[in-house]
Image (cartoon, rainbow, N blue to C red; front, side):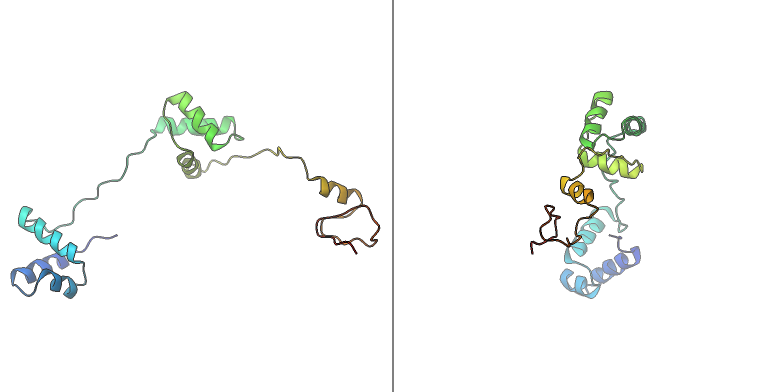
Length: 155
């Protein structure tokens, strides 16, 4: 959320000093919250400042540049690894533990794609249907055929 302008803050202070209304009335008049007026007046009385406070900066990054490059290297070495495995390998190499979600955000930010290999066999029903030149959803012409595909009905 963007901070209120210094001009608006000064108008609220001036109106309060001229006793043009209570804090609640000033909040309504200037379309701000009562708590904003209270906090502004308190800060003005204590510090004499009306400017918005500096942004706190947020949380510090858990990984430094060296560790980010290590993640990139780990993905390049084994692009079939799942996020949890990458987290474990990072912890083994650098001693820093991060969550699966953090690893996912990091790989997206670095635009590192992980290619998965197929470990599941092809569906047996699909193979049976293809053996007779049919695909799933193709209706059978003969009702006495031994093959059933997923969307076929017995007739």
